[in-house]
Amino acid sequence: MVVICGTNGKLLEKLEKDKLSDCVRLLGFTQDMDLYMDAADLMLTKAGGLTTSEAIMKRLPLVYINVIPGLEIRNIDFMVRHGCAVTAETPEELAVLACELLQDPDRLQTWRAKLAETFPDIAVEKMYRFISRDLGLEA
Image 1 (cartoon, rainbow, N blue to C red):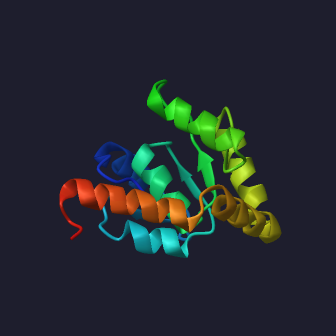
Image 2 (image 1 turned 60 degrees about the vertical axis):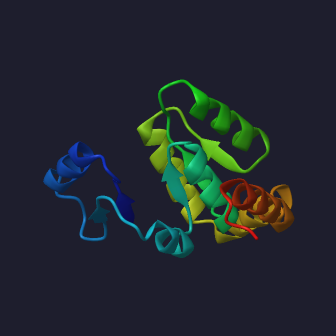
């Protein structure tokens, strides 16, 4: 298991002090998130727009952690309603849910197919072209 704390130094320090299993690798900020996402079977994360978009492109099943109300709640609602993510109310429930999912590779594979069906590559390509054109990156 890899736990990536990003720029949350306080969380990283706390986890380092907690003497977690040797099976848990702790990281702070990394520029290799796409590689970690490629290697992942499942991602537990807050429902930020960029992370959600990257996970969609990677066809990576998402378990959303609870967050402060706001835009991320809308992302959770949208993704859960469309069968593209799940969430739970407590850290304990999240842990149980994640363990259950990791023990069911068929469900994770079906989930990846659902992500591909809901968000086809053509939509991703159209978004990329629109953004690239807007930024002046496309000729």
